[in-house]
Length: 115
Image: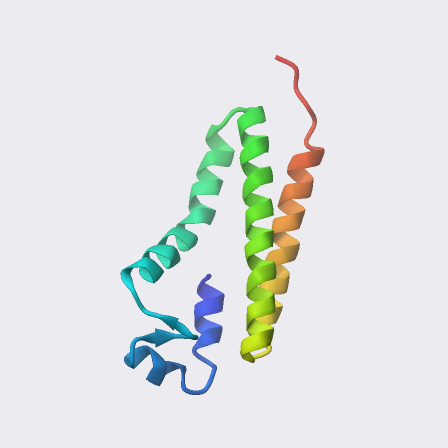
């Protein structure tokens, strides 16, 4: 998310848009701020949960979150291509798709433990 925000600032006119209350075509609202805050904290929460959860809940949490991140990044990849964002942003989203899919795949292939 940090890379995305940094790269977004490379798009001409983005700073003027932010000053006018618009971020990349989205109105700047408390909801958008909440979304960015939550999305920024997801990796920290996942790192903590991966260290503290037992195997089955950890596996399912990683599987679901990996799929959600991959889906979100696919949507972002399509949107950034449509809106003409700088080339680095679609690359960032593509890496996010790969990372999310890899996390989900590893969680799916995780050895099953019988209790």
